Image (cartoon, rainbow, N blue to C red; front, top):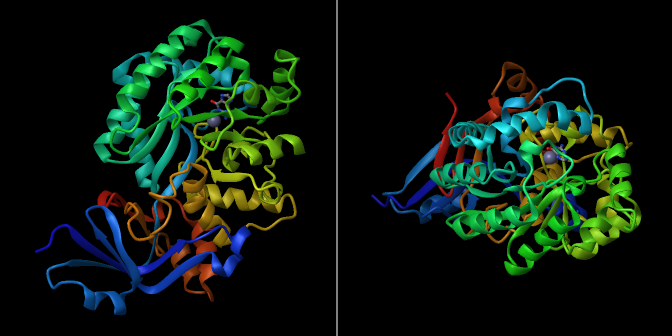
Length: 435
Ligand code: GUN
Ligand code: ZN
């Protein structure tokens, strides 16, 4: 037996480029009867089973799936693990929702037992939904981030997270200071950044909850450790935008606040970006920053409709985010379902090949991890999902009517959710199996 090599036989699809750059038909590879060969947690080969099977030794185990589709693991570019227990909280838009529900829930994370319990539930939920990489908010407490990374390390997931920086305009019990925020972040960076598959993100919550001093310190951390991420919120809600302009009267726009403190770079990810002017879009594009498009959250909080077409035209990197707990599902498939509707409301179409790209390679590119994950290029880490096309009686029946690959993908993205995830693999190891 050669236990280090394993092969998986199924229909297989993966993105190879952004359809906006190469056209829909050049943006993916599909193998109707495909084989994914994995060695030591990395992709060794992908292609038609008929071609690859004869190249394998007799001792290699081949796992076969029927009426299934293998895709790369899904990538969630914006989510809050401490909000797992308060998802689906009724009635408010952003600022009241934060005050009434979010801040009290985050207060519980000074207790490390609670933080561990929620981190495990959260990561289990991601794996149940086929998500293998996420960019994750903790709380202001450093214990929350230790708990998160300890749990992610256990499952060997590629994860990015950070301690929230917030030193004003929130309840006292959730505030840090510029000095303590710096010290705690630094301690976490030293402990976790680059350990196994883990990365650290400097995480100011959003402009209203950090003083000038604290935003400057966020910039200083990024300067001290050039390969850190920067993760925050931007221009989600009209009242929030007005508030930022009142708090920073000397800045010309919301994004200009972050720009002033040197927080824009290729490793910066801004959640939402709904109410941006052209100049802000251009600055995002010029700096190589990314936006996390979070449709379920934007609909749930009544924040607005994200203009994906404009971001394409202005060459802004975009990934997909669930933004749980303002988002209403951990499922990237359900997030794509809602993304499609957000586009419909603006008279635009979201093609299933673009959706596949956003959920996988596009997310990897937004996170600058496309040399490691996002598709099945040889040598990349073997993070993948086995999707079941018979997950529900309705999906089974609807799939029997499909005429084309894009229709089949579209049905999966519209009707699919956690029930469609048969198995999830991280670095070649099965981390979730349905039932
Ligand atoms: N803006 C600042 N904090 C948050 C948060 O926790 N969720 C969302 N959706 N927006 C925010
Ligand atoms: Zn968020």
